Amino acid sequence: MEEGTQVGVAFDRNGNATGAMGVDAAFYRNDETLGFVIGNFAGEMTSLYVAHGMPSLFTDEAIGEGIGAASRLMLTFGTFFFDADLDGRLDLLHANGHIEEEIAIVQPSQSYRQAARLFWNTGAVTGATFVPVPTIQTKDLAQPMVGRGAAYADIDNDGDLDVVLTQVGGRPALLRNDQQSGHHWVRVKVQSRQGNHDAIGAWVTLTAGGVRQRRHVVPTRSYLSQVELPLTFGLGTVAQIDSVQVKWPSGSVDEKRGIQADTVVIIEQGG
Image (cartoon, rainbow, N blue to C red; front, side):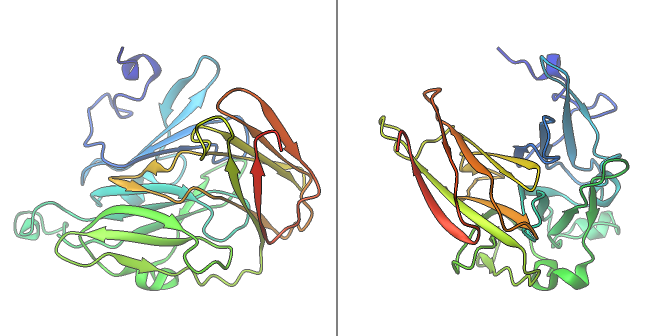
């Protein structure tokens, strides 16, 4: 049964249907608040549905969370949450590009090729959670393209997440993440012994420095895209990990302690 209308994710804040291309979900505030981000058509701005209470009731808080106005002119296909600077907070990326090559003729404010957009998670308790990163800081990410798919993976095995963007009429762009924050990190691979070897659907919770981060092992996200299976947790300046807990798709739970920062760890069910 379609439940989008009942839980508040079927329409935007004004009750209008939107383009709805790429989608992702995450506990981006590092609390119990789940958020759904959906890329929309030009002029509609991105939707960010935030859960309130149980059972879940969502409201579109894109404007208050800082991504509404900044995304209004863009036509967003790929979108996902990821920790771009490994500070322990999930940032947000948009892959943008129009569907009409000559759109600028009839709408001068629009362009066929559009730059991708990165939103930094400030961790603010009050006010907007996200702020747009200036294009001068994102370098090649800010080059206009007809963006469609978007995915991430640690391509060069240095602990941070690199980005792949696909585009119409051009080759995919592989953008290496060269951030030099010095932040700590840990990458977690989970493996099940009960048929679902990659443990698709598992929830992994990392606790460090008094902060709980939650990640879902669901590689299919964004728009016509799939991200890597290992989960990357940024730790910021914290170098001590308290625990990593895995809730397996079967419902069983394993917890690991003594995990070192800046490493890749493999956790097997029941191991």
